[in-house]
Image (cartoon, rainbow, N blue to C red; front, side, top):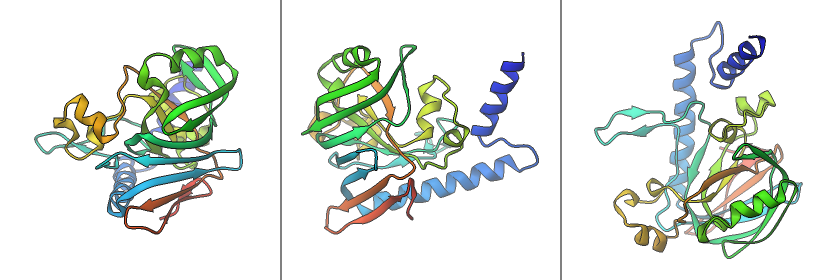
Length: 250
């Protein structure tokens, strides 16, 4: 009973439900700020982003053709606003499955089918994992990457600030839909059709041609760090600061 009570308190905390405050107002403010950042990312019309951390991460992720940043709130076909996930801290988009290059190190354990994989890293060339390793669960990680042809490529890039409530809690919930809100992450496997223009009306073949990955899996691994720098490169040239020291730079 004591453990369950502690769990509920942790859930309320990471979901921004705190005693003595206006929870609804806090959520509206959080959603508004996140949506504004999403909209700015879309306005920049980025070609690619580069993620760097002192732990050795230096990963450049090209974006799919017509990529759209999503996050915070969504709309039903009838026009009603809703929040699909609570908590929600991410702004996410579709990588180009063929334009991911560099090295990335995980910053949180990853729970796959109930087993923990930890201390892992990946090297990408032209979107494909060409090398990887893990201090714990390396064979399990290998099995995941060998699930199908698309499992060694990523279908999602998501940005989450290091100050997110779930990261500050220091807890691992062993549930990806919770744990992914702790840090920037990449997802191996399937991409979301809604993260490219007109994607929900495209066939799998048309999505693949846009650069959206296809797989039977979608597994999020956290790679964000407190010192992470993320730079964006618009299609028209130049660069913009997206993250500095693990936080939004705008």
